[in-house]
Length: 383
Image 1 (cartoon, rainbow, N blue to C red):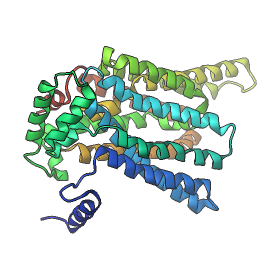
Image 2 (cartoon, rainbow, N blue to C red; image 1 turned 90 degrees about the vertical axis):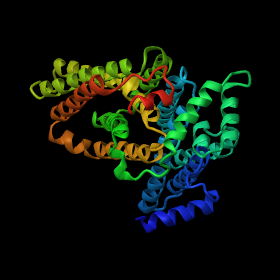
Image 3 (tube, rainbow, N blue to C red; image 1 turned 45 degrees about the vertical axis):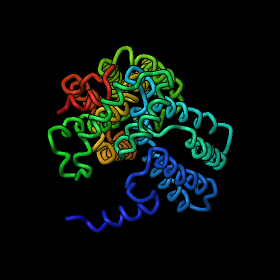
């Protein structure tokens, strides 16, 4: 039995996007996301009281939530297998660079002007989206085969033979389209269960390590994060996803453990002593090392893997759920950071260390290597 809300949504979506098109294209999804982002930044910039700030932040969260899911999915769907990792990691590299630029600009302009500047990327994004091709896999799923092949040919180059890739995508889409509507309870099927566990697990563990709290209170180390993410972009299709995740989570575990131990030691050292100063410097270096190792793998790769392993039939539903889980976890970690640190700084970092250690075990035992495989090959491997 269908829910009435589902029918209303379908009717509204058909009015907005046209009959028979229940899901917006990747470009339209990004356009939709850009609008609340622009309005949100304007609300913050022109705020007369805290109500406008809350409304603006809510709109920003809505827009960023759509973008943070749609962009990695679009990149994964248009990229050739040997470039998918590098292109996918460009997204988190851009995010990290943008955060660093925001911190730098904040030293020279007022927060209202900074919010106004925030409208510029989305204002440029909207017309820019008219010049990029639609995702071939999305077009194939919508049974627009002529447009699908034309889009893929544009992406691969006019001289490239795309016959094999076209056939693989058609087979995968035909299999997925046997059931066009996936209900939430059907996600428990074996072929969906492991991709969901891996995608959601990596994105939640990414935040449970405490990285959002660390970055919120340590803006001066973004340069190191940008450099590390840039190295990841170069290595991802050479070394592979899995080994970089292992190195990243192992490095985070060791760095967080050092910070935890130092906080416990500092409780027994006079604050005016040389030893206290030395321990403080080691703690700062360990925090920087944690951010670098996070950016080296756990920052970018979970988003890349999520966009690669989710089957096309559940990509919208499961990807949205994974993104929501990531941002809710990030919110929870950021909001509880001060409370935990006031309870015990050493104990807080022990908790973060244990999460990172579990993440390392999770990756070693369950996360597969996806380097050099087509999206269809990756998704067939879970059947």
